[in-house]
Image 1 (cartoon, rainbow, N blue to C red):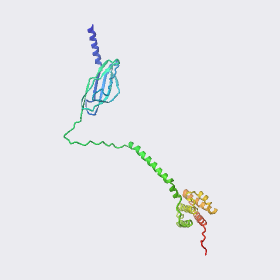
Image 2: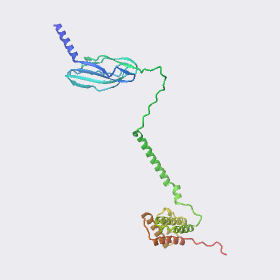
Image 3: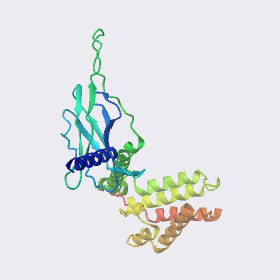
Length: 307
């Protein structure tokens, strides 16, 4: 009876061993120092037997390092479950190194299967001692891509715009600039002498006869405003026409002259900004208005000594 029990136990063990198959496979068993190789651990087992896959730590394989480990894949085929897990290993010492056997257990810590041991050969790079020693090869320079340059390029453009804006604001609102533009230097000659001479020179150019209305009225307006500024220190160059005429009421100029000046300056504004073309008699009338205004506001000089 005892022999029969041992016989059946032996048959059961052999049958169980035949249905279980655990093994290790390497992509190659010959690598150079620092190279990596894929190691696959596979187990084929009946589906009704729960199996615990071996836990392989980083130091479980002497002289070798585990670079990465994949998930455990499960495949059912031909009534068998195939469990497979892939590891990436490497080594930095030359020589032949054993890959130990790994054991599969059941949930009750019973041994189910065991992989056979493997071996990995790590070789060094062959050095030809007959050749001359060469310098270390410098690092390769990778070309810059637009994606890498774009953040820096954007920053430079934004910075340039900010700096340009600051410079423009400083120049635009600088007190010195504003004072220089609003306060032209006082002439050595009387204001009326300069104004009448400039008016005569303007009329001699016959700009209106040539159709250059904008140039004629621009200069006529500038001569008038410059005379008002030099005559009474009114900042007429920075004022609009209505402000200039309001300021003239505080001067000895008559209401009629002020009215005529306002009319001439308003026509000048229309020609400059609205491209209006006055008639020939209007051009002469506006010119005469300014000449009369300058003459009527010229101060009367009295001799210092009467003989």
